[in-house]
Picture 1 (cartoon, rainbow, N blue to C red):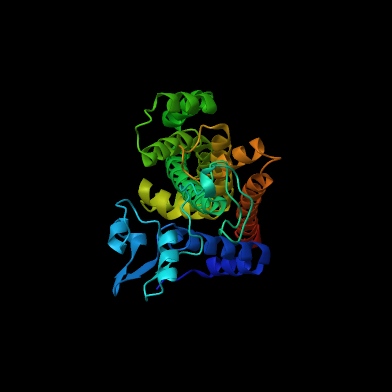
Picture 2: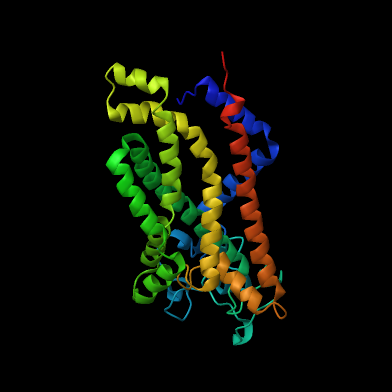
Length: 355
């Protein structure tokens, strides 16, 4: 069982006492839990099909052609139509669909005309459709999941690289510190947006979507770690001059023991306070890149792509930009409230005792 020291327990109790941040954390945690099982909630594949006393689970199994359920075509079954067919036949077969029975990539255009449709309960387009007749709620749902996963992965890699290099610069100093300072100064002068444009102009369109997202993540991390590096360098430089570090050296502690057992634990509480704001920055950056057309590859669901559609169709389809804007504002507000609560609860001034 995980045991926490009294100081950490005090910080967690203080975090729970800051209601705005604590409830924002619960809401965001619940949202992440829902997005992790998104295929059970937002999907054009059925959760369960009962046909001739046989049960099928299309959501997490191989695709089933229409002939598997007595239909005449051999391509993948349209489970919404199958549900209506079974209801009309009334022979005991049934289909259970997700709450939002649409995929984020599916074009659903009644009458064959691809255009934005306003919100409608009859067709279960609760937030309407976009310019290519894709369900907006499905796009927002999976776009939010991708944004959260992308920003968390971004934060982890920025912290790993920034803490590693920054801690080494501050601890060892000397020539090692000077060399990396010059390298960071040169690297920081390279324009980020131009680099993204150049990189994505030479990447073949045949690359898988996951590969292109990985390349975008790599580029963003490569341009973002210097900020964390300078912070860690400063904190490590201050900590290594303290008396407890000198005492550890006198008793023969190795460099790795001093760094991992003494320096990092004493700066970790401050590092934690930067995590939510790093996530906010990543979400804002990926949304801006998507809006400009240099972010996630099409047709990946994204908040920035919906904002771009919404601003281009502000008069004819205002529900597009409204839905995307409110989702983005809500997401950033939740993370910001969590960041403020973490910063307040982990503030070393609240728990430092001078004797």
